[in-house]
Image (cartoon, rainbow over all chains, first blue to last red):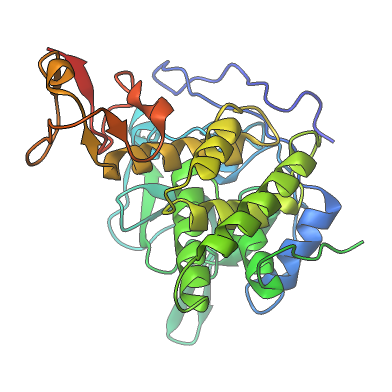
Length: 164
Length: 181
């Protein structure tokens, strides 16, 4: 279990701006079991690589090496992920994504609601399958097709590459 | 032991648990609540009636008492979040008290419910009809009001009285912000 949930870590963007964050409480086994009754009805691409935890969320995986939640749990407006991408010197990928790129999911409200990291491109016949590693909120971390996560429907999917 | 829903359909609560637990931001969490609570209201065909409101408030208090003292995020959070979403549109002093009570909390593991309640209160205040005495009207001016402001009769605030103190509300919301003229 996470010690002292609610605490935050010192975390800065590449250009030195503080990144608000917090370590959330873990979900209980009963909460996870309840959630997975729905999740196992076709929403899960496979087993978790790392199981459910409140330690970090998707942005915490992408930007903070699994150390914390970005933004803090329940915090409505302390951070825009797009700003975080800019401060970390990422720019929109033009063309086909590559392993290591960040993938972002932007809602109809214009908010980036989910991020992950492209881990590989599977070529199946004439099609390319983009495989992403991402953390699903307080649930677990898994590899999935870029379109196979809870936040994919109705989201605008974009790829970001680190400026050299 | 598996969780059994108190008031809502079990399958809806299971979906809520999955979608809320997989949400990474407070706004996404609130959007999920909006969608699921709207679906639940439609499922009742005619919307919440007064009897339902009383039962929902009672159930919400029971669920809240179970999660507020927990050290982890518990399944009651999912059902409570949807109930709060359903109650968000109800004008009732018990609902005000419920939301105001939960809104005081911003620490894990109930930070998500606290944020949801605060957002709900902001939305309720933005939709409320405010009228106040002419003497008071002379000293107040709405800084972001769209349309006319009623200035007749005694001061009333139809939803959350505490939200009158909203001068410090977060920027970018659609709240009615009253400032001393």
